[in-house]
Length: 479
Image 1: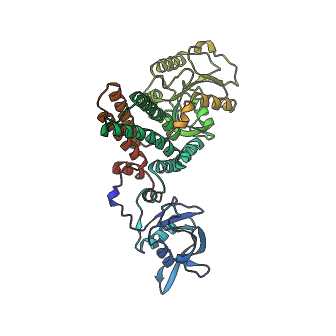
Image 2 (image 1 turned 45 degrees about the horizontal axis):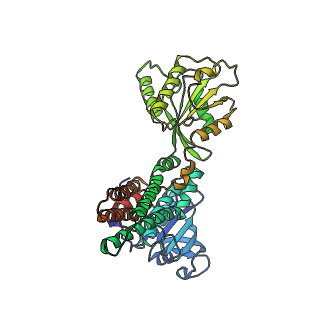
Image 3 (image 1 turned 90 degrees about the vertical axis):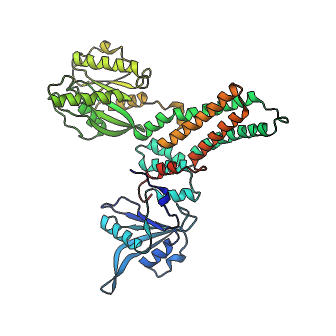
């Protein structure tokens, strides 16, 4: 999505938009916000009981009909609706807000929106309602990012983390860090302005700066975990042809997503779905089981599978327990072993790998000693009969449980915010370096000031148009 230029936002306008997905549904909502919102609804709404809707109390509902202009001398009823009145400052935007709840449907919602726009209102741009909430002091930029992640949440864990950010817990973290920096900054200011009267305890300042540096570093290091719970960990199901990968894939999804056949090599392409395993979102990939290509198509399938395999956060190796280990199995076992040695982020001790001994309902011929050199969780199951799936889910959770104590440091930041926080961290490290090298206190003071400015950008206290655009342009119209 291209960034919306905030210079084109006229906050004096009254804006309107469809706030629900326009489709065949039980309910649809159109939202109006601005100075003339109450006058607009007064012109197009006929209440069941005669009243002046403009004088209605805030947080009240009113039943009636939305009407269009006269047609053949008569006013045309568009839909039967409920009107919600929220007067400033007691609304999402801190402006007068009217929400029209109608029957769902593309035609009805667009017709209502069209009638509103004819009253001198304009269509809201992406994120403009939330942008106004920010401008009017109802939320900060961290809360705005939390709102976006609530809308996009794929699991309960993501929702919980985003909701805590909306509640202001992330702001408290950064406010605490800013206060600590400001205290040191003021000490350096005194030292600069009154050098003869001030005895600065530089050792104490060094310890305080080091502590601040560690706190910011913890938040930055939690970024991968944060991104994982938001976007999902990459999980690849690999195994030789006919080991039962696709059956397992369908079993985890609780639906027949891919064709299952006894014919080896049925799956020719990588298939992706997102599932929730005990609150951990997994982007799960069913890869082609073909290891030796016979044609161009199979060659491309192997290349694609290899790419996903190398990028995976979690590898699930499916072995056929009813057969002894063969050359294809050993190839994959060695590939996982090599990958674990190369990428500690994929295989941290016993984390990142789950070895699945499938077809446990058949006579077992697989010698487990042949795979004892791979560190990982082992699970026996029958994907066909859906036996042992609960044990697999527990193993997946343990293998992907990389959050640990870092959950307290999790903050949802977009890419631009992440770069700003890195800059603040570099400023603090620069101040620490200047102190350790005994340089002029002015340089320490400057680095601290830059850190404060960057942290101020994160919350919105320091204006940064590029950051505003990066946040609100990712919102949908109507939010």
